[in-house]
Image (tube, rainbow, N blue to C red; front, side, top):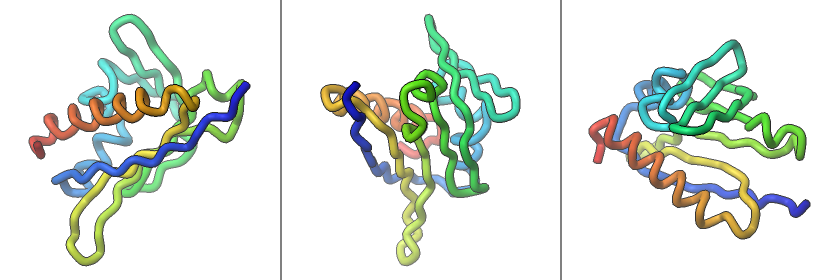
Length: 130
């Protein structure tokens, strides 16, 4: 099995960190833009799309700052894979960005980046920050 490559993507976004955190950390917030529906039971989140569902474990959460998940499907392969969505605020300009960290196979990097771009685009629409 080839090792996956770590991907870091930055998305400037016009929204308050407090509001953004609701959208990246709660089932109701995530279901507005990340997947069609999200259920959670404790640390276990179930993401539901039209014809599939994936489960992820919430590894860590820092209020107003970041969330980190690991897909259960990845857990059997390698404990080091995860995806993280972090809110970054520029100290000087106060500009807000979402920093996404994910892992992908070498031949799927562009696909994964495009997927995140589409997801974040949906989030911007929901926030009205287009």
